Length: 454
Ligand SMILES: Nc1nc2c(ncn2[C@@H]2O[C@H](COP(=O)(O)OP(=O)(O)OP(=O)(O)O)[C@@H](O)[C@H]2O)c(=O)[nH]1
Ligand SMILES: [Mg+2]
Image (cartoon, rainbow, N blue to C red; front, side, top):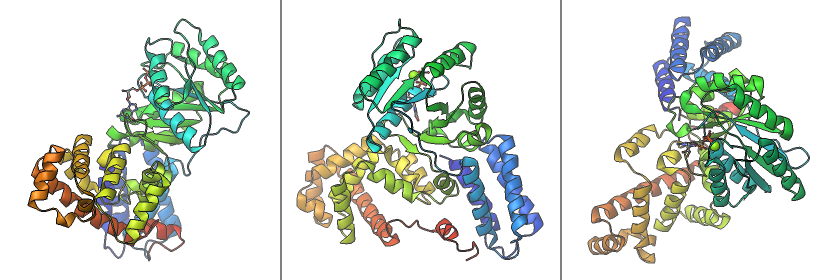
């Protein structure tokens, strides 16, 4: 996500790096470059204008031109402004009402409503220990209700069955009745999408909101349509109201125009980003972390959080203790590979590690995918305990045995061992950096109150 914008910012900052002073001309040129970068990322013009004006205003207002390292000042101010347009602070789902708290999902056809409901319900039910009920009011598309039912079964959540011949009125009222009688904390309502905003859809949504009076009205928007998603969101907001936004298909969005425009245009906060088709492919939206990611600072905090979410505590403890002992063996590596598959593949994970853009490209080129992860796991699975602990004993004959056992080639075994060594090195490096500290922790310094020129 944000790959091209990130690259552009990198270039802009490089062009002023090392300058002791920044002249007014330099500043104007830099602001111009930032403006072009944002427009190329498909950020709405009105948002771009405000962004540039605010950065310029802050620079002039602070009168720090002569005293700070230009690149640090620009990074700091651009970071702050990015955080601002992304929504300043994290916005949580609101359940503070008499149960059931009703959460309505709506949006254009195919934007990802049904998939997102399953992802969010799964996340919240686990994280906040809430008893959740799912219902679909989509009586237009024949398989729509089954789609949500299948997903509900997959994540072990309850689903209210109804038929497409039922009226929306009945479906919603029955679901609310069931939720109340059976003491559900949350009721998630899925709705039918349309290709464009039309009166029928708006009437349907108005009807549902009037019956259900949802505490959260969540608009699901496709990030691939860029700033258009912000304009569509605005229309929804004016008729139905929006309390939060979920952006989907972030995995395919290299530009980020939707994420950077939608809050300013609608006033509604982004709550989640969806990053793939799998249930786990969702992340909570932290404006400051995203700003760090855009500026190439990475997001080691998000990475650690996501990675630790569903590894059991003992597993984390085990890896941690091993790391502390300076030990990271092939069993730990296998554990990591399994995790990678779960959290949306290598690219998903690598995109959160600082400075990894180059590596990411290499991976895309080599087409490392879930399939190859399975093969790697098979290779490790064919090793003895001793081999996993001390990979250096794996010489030619052992390699042949392992490759035969796992149905792979000796070259693949070699490649895996090489990757393991690299990973071991990286884990040691990460350990040195400390648990929570980001590498190149400039933003940490800035936030810690140190002036940007240190
Ligand atoms: N790559 C990717 N695909 C997604 C994401 N979210 C949803 N999809 C896919 O997009 C397609 C449509 O998703 P749905 O959840 O059915 O969309 P919807 O808004 O409910 O569609 P309608 O009910 O027909 O209006 C499905 O194939 C999903 O798997 C995402 O974040 N990334
Ligand atoms: Mg749907």
